[in-house]
Length: 273
Ligand SMILES: Nc1ncnc2c1ncn2[C@@H]1O[C@H](COP(=O)(O)OP(=O)(O)O)[C@@H](O)[C@H]1O
Ligand SMILES: Cc1ncc(COP(=O)(O)O)c(N)n1
Image (cartoon, rainbow, N blue to C red):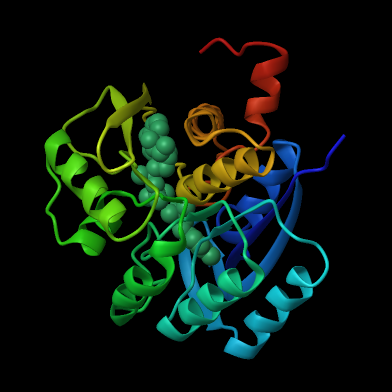
């Protein structure tokens, strides 16, 4: 049997709920071999981000060379990239090694408000990375920052998705976790820029959502690494994050992490709420 291999290029979360740690856990749970290139180390827990320590361009490039000259990922995702110079380095390596099936999670701000991408780096993300993406997965504030479109309706989400596809991405998913006004459902809008499809699930009333976006994009990458078509990958990722939030972990004093092994438990024996 072919072994699917997935790579995450992202920041480390010492608290284990987001970033590289969330991605590797997700890869493992979904049955692919996980690899990582660390762009920044964060001192972080459920209460917030206490420190951000970016890696040098050289350190990131060398990690990607080590992977590119030996292991060959079947799919990859990016998360926290911190600066324009790191975005350019990552985009250059993706092109150099011809890596396909790139999921770009345009991480900008942590849920507690800490900046994980310099504001001036947004333009570099648009010009250098998004054109290489199979799919871009912004939350609503990130979609607004990328497109300049203020999102307060389904139509606005459609416009933002189209704008991201016009930047050169094959597909966009505008995630609905931050959407105001729908207390019953969390609805993600998927598009290729021309047609649209919604992936909806019951909205769970919890503050323990640390790492939801990282986990969702990692799950898409894991499924792409196993050769799934994009819509199937997004459908599975939505089910995976739904389970992970339904059984999120009440650990630490703040916003707790999602439960990366919940999907596996639900598959074995349905958990009744
Ligand atoms: N309270 C919630 N209940 C159910 N699903 C949620 C909830 N919050 C977020 N999600 C889902 O989690 C995924 C990540 O969304 P979101 O929280 O918007 O991203 P981010 O972590 O990047 O801010 C999406 O699939 C979204 O629909
Ligand atoms: C290192 C790192 N990367 C990303 C996030 C975003 O987390 P979320 O998935 O909750 O938006 C984070 N808090 N820390």
